[in-house]
Length: 80
Image 1 (cartoon, one colour):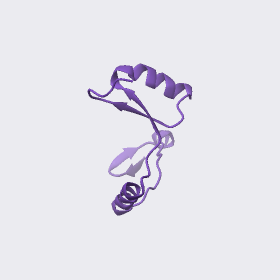
Image 2 (tube, helix red, strand yellow):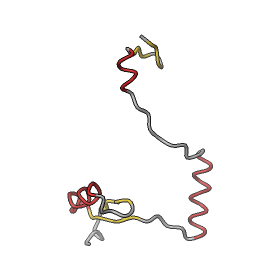
Image 3 (tube, one colour):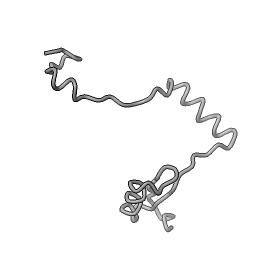
Image 4 (cartoon, helix red, strand yellow):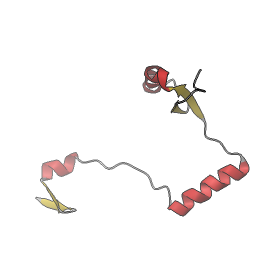
């Protein structure tokens, strides 16, 4: 057994754990990036779907047909 953050894990459990992620900088880096984007007109490339079309958005995403990121929208202006 190994102790990881006060949690005991067997060797088998350890080999099954995965940690994914990427370093994106500090909170200050994120703030600077957002400010730069606002000042220079940089916008993310997304595909919007109203919440009423969530099944379609999910299918498009999993089929690989989405070019960018899918964003679900909520509200009166969601008619697409």
